Image 1 (cartoon, helix red, strand yellow):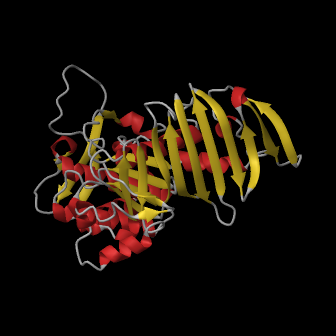
Image 2: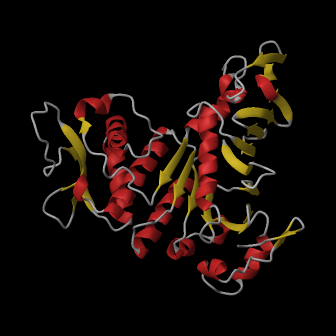
Length: 386
């Protein structure tokens, strides 16, 4: 199942109102736009929706309204959720045009029950979403599709540490259940991937890192030689260590450069997701941050290729001109903000404008720098940028 389109608004009718107009998404998507247009906020909106659908976030926020479409074979899923003052005021789920769940204020609603072949009434706490609260794989199997999608969203903040400082992983805890959605837990995720998929897992990561210009002979988990622990602690701690082909020894996790570790972290988790089928959607904010031009471009190529070859959907954001020039315009989502409203232009709703820009022979980045799309008209509305 793939996220096909989304719109969002919050605090409508107040001075805190903010809206994201409906836009469609492809298999691979790059969110671009000037600073403060809403790229990170858009990724956070998708991530928050996923948390609600899988129960990771138990209660709705103060205000919000989602309208979402999921591609689901011949029967798309349409999901609407509205909430205000921390309570759900409207929720509806349809599959192939048939309403399967509807509820209003107070937690009261109706849901289709498969075994009896008709709707049944329900009530749940007004602060909770019904698509999670009413999960029942026998009576309401359609809810499992939303749950699985929400559980399979991974949100990476590439401009941050990506788990670099997360040392002090006790060996005995590596075999305990881990939260695979916590993208800072790269050490236990690597351990699990190697344990399940053996050398094939490590070799795939080494190959991907090689494509970025990081030629690794080996990747291991070990106690960092420069980790000093004061006092008698009878626990062995481990972190990642890499053996580069041009260095005589291993480089332990604290000494791996931030840029290299970010690349290693996301490739470990992407390969684990691809092999295990545990991820349906990767959200990557500030992709390429901290990497040089060549490696930034190569990382983009690797991520795009892996997602095109698998069932994983990729939604990235960037302000990096080199990243923009590495991603085809067909995969761009160009964000334009007019006061508190954000609109998105892409090949789905502004194909002619993108095609006209291609004829100029300019680099992709110049589409942003020249404000070429500022006056594009879509559905009778003219784009504005602020």
